Length: 461
Image 1 (cartoon, rainbow, N blue to C red):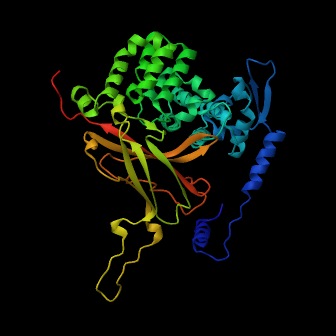
Image 2 (tube, rainbow, N blue to C red; image 1 turned 180 degrees about the horizontal axis):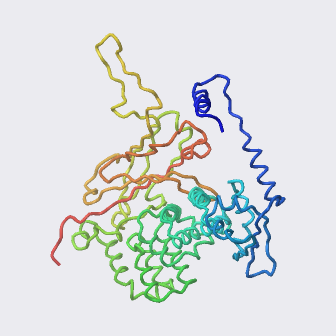
Image 3 (cartoon, rainbow, N blue to C red; image 1 turned 135 degrees about the vertical axis):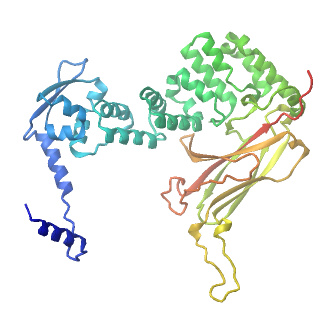
């Protein structure tokens, strides 16, 4: 062992910033040798036998107790007094066990969408916390990935089962923002009653229309055949006033599900017809319109908004205009509102704008382009007496359309009294072509206007 003066001299030399100092890094070589150690079993002092109920054969891994114990407290305990252990795994985790062991040796693993849950199960069972966090992060960042059978619904149910609230919320948000895509996929049939009811409660569902939602719910009920009270609870979560009277009449005449549970929703259907027949102001005198039943969801129909694809959005300011229906009531079906939209990629807040001074030293405080932030302003072109009792909530979806599906990456909602969202693309870097907010160097927006009715006067019934 070196003497104290020698150790201090070495430490002093390390901190002196000597120009001849260099870092010698052979970590890749070490990882390669660790992989060879696992592959060849050289110097093995422990054996893992992995069995499944579906097979009489066991997979055998010649391992090293030190490396397993460093990564997993479970293996440390299992290998404390024995060198050969038998592990029982279901087929889906047994199929990934070699990948799992390789991670313990090398600290890295590659997985596919369908392997995320079994890999997370292995990491949780053997308490490999780094891998567990890594797989959970992988799932959160791959919700929008393409898969033949879909995967987000399964990931949501798994997150509920293990109590991962963050993953659960990420899956739920993705399903809400991309529900129109999910409704037509194979995974819609695997949605649980609890998940379906959670989705139906939300006003931020992104889909073409409420009728599209009813049709999908009808198909779900026909396949799953839940008990009467459950089916009635599901049907009462549909927002019937958001469906046109002609479509409501057709549902009453043709929907077997609606006919079977008509008594449970008859009051809602009657109220929906009243809503469409009367002036919204008159209707609001007698009924509470400040509830979810009369609030539109994020409908992609052209009646409620417009797509806007901005090419090279970092270049300069842009503007557009479009029209929406005044409200969902048939009384307002022929009334239109024109909206003007301004997009600025580098708007400067007042605090960062140039400051002029009489002093000789510097007349202008310079402002850098990168100090600006994207801004989107949405205003009605005109005002009208028809707006009485109505305010407009604006929602801007940022995403991409792939194979006919709308995949929403981000959503911004404007307060009803505001013309813009304060945090719109606040963290986006539109200068980079690789920005997650851009698709082929274009910004894909869908602007939705949601009319919100308000009760003004309560009349005596």
